[in-house]
Length: 193
Image 1 (cartoon, rainbow, N blue to C red):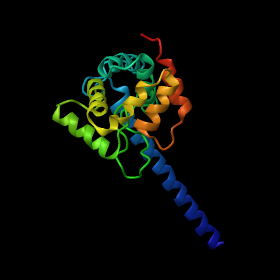
Image 2: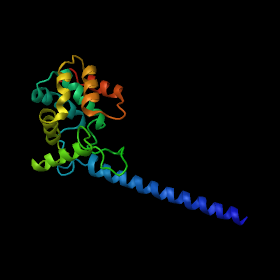
Image 3: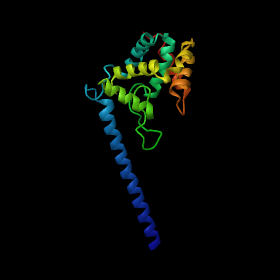
Image 4: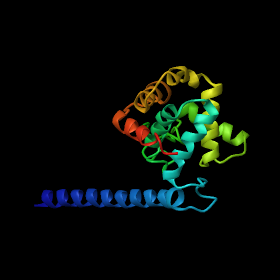
């Protein structure tokens, strides 16, 4: 009987700890959402447009800045839409690498690419959560670094699906691509001007 009571105490203690961890995790997630997603004050979220407007504007901006077609820009933006959960999350919610900062910005830049984005933003006195910082750094990275090596292949594409594949495979290079989502999102940006 004493062993059973000890076992019950252990299980009760274990489940109580799990409940507390769950409460803490929920509170942290709510704080993150409150601080970064729902708050539309100028200091919290620098996107001047609703998440649904960001993609359409970005397609037009990238067409002009990179000299690419609408379907090519849609392939790029569809990938970014996928990466950010519809342009709602500029910071990766559950980083794949434990203990890391995770992805940041439209392209969910990680590691050295994240560091380069943060340095560029600091040097240019812009907030990494702003539309302008994300758009301008994206254009900078594609136009001025080795990461832009995918651009000639993107320029050969004639459909949003082809463009989405090139961007995913050659520019973003995600571990788990979920290509159907990327393609579907890319296709949704064609003809939306």
